[in-house]
Image (cartoon, rainbow, N blue to C red):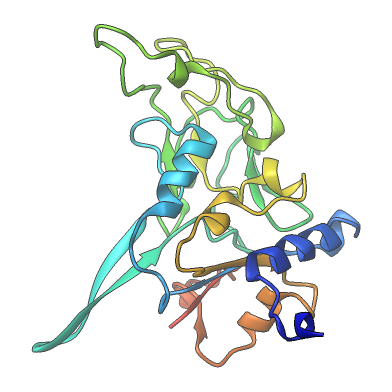
Length: 241
């Protein structure tokens, strides 16, 4: 009987909701994220786990954590703001791409076709959130006595295996890159790794079209905001302040 009084773990709940959403047609899903700035402690665990999961090279960061000083002296404090791709419903990065390498999927995730991308970087300029970076092709241990093999292991971004080789223009080297909600994990029923590794449980993820999901519940709160609402991009990353 005591079990009925035990609250379900939030991460397990979100995992279950993702698996439920995957049973629906792709076009009926709308993935979104809520970040509770009151719970973020600036540990950068989400940034580090994202780098590890996507094997990101130097200079490519999908999920930086910005630091903000708020208040008026002497009542000043610090706030941390993780800033992934906003996965906009009206993404300004899409129409500026001259080769249609960036597009919005039916489930709302803004994706990049590395094989199509020509590296013109128009999308970087168009993004009002500075959420895109260019992969120059560096590795951390190149030009050292020993290039470490782990840096050259294939990653599975967007579900495709890609191998990096220094000095070779093989995608995603020479392409623009960004957060994609760990699409390769998501389509296998797993949470984005930044959500799973957050030590303060400040990140919530799920199907915004599911009225019973945790993210739908969170986005209905009166203290929810989006970044740069005035530019009309309609982000699907929300913040609780």
